[in-house]
Image 1 (cartoon, one colour):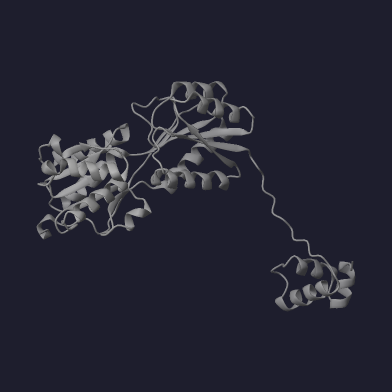
Image 2 (image 1 turned 30 degrees about the vertical axis):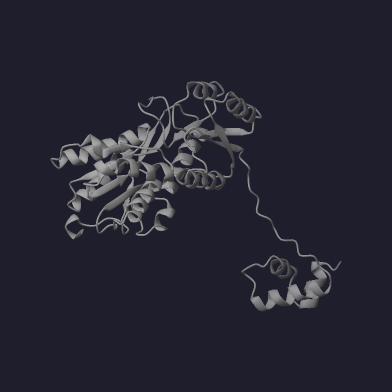
Length: 340
């Protein structure tokens, strides 16, 4: 095979220019690079590109509490998991998704078998409830770990937590409807501390406006679309006098809009609807769903940064970091006086 020195003689340039041309250096003119590369091709020279070197820092386990997950995977949790994977990889770790079911001892045994390979450097736990056995296990092995999203209250001061301020989210949703002059506002909620806090924010907003809380307008439901739709059907007699609905997930918000539309009511001309989560699928319904966004990219970044701090500094100080939700205005809410 021809050498770079021989290529330099053929091209009439220095050997260093040939080397830079073959590596596609920006310091060499396009004309010279093309000439050198064509000569190399003609004479059978194999161009070896320099490869970037990435340090593999080890594995980060993302543990999902499947007790909270519906089938198919809850869209919001899917978005969050994907963002966590990106953040883990951006810091040169490799992600491993593990499921945890407190009612299935085999799932805990599998988590143990993966962690005990020695390749897992830390964990991010997306957990509905606090599980003492999991916490004790990670603590005994000195595995740094972060709880993110849906962590049950009251919180333990010794744990590292990244979460959304759900109370502020409920307050934000209700205040938006109140700003549009709505005074008859129902909410569809569910089981869990995050939903309790969203409901508390909703109630605080109504009380601050001098309104009495109507317990019949706080309706608990499941988390699937079908459950939300069926809840509207079963409770319509007591809900029909409302002018607005705060659905505490976007999936429920879509169910509310479709129920109303299917029964001849227009949104937002007759009823206003606001959701919670900020999943992109909220733009698919008509009208597009106004919602409170849980900023998954920010949650994921903060979770990984907090875990990195534990991995590098090895300090024992616990932190509780709450991310503020944001209002996303689309087309499903309107001033009550503009409604039919």
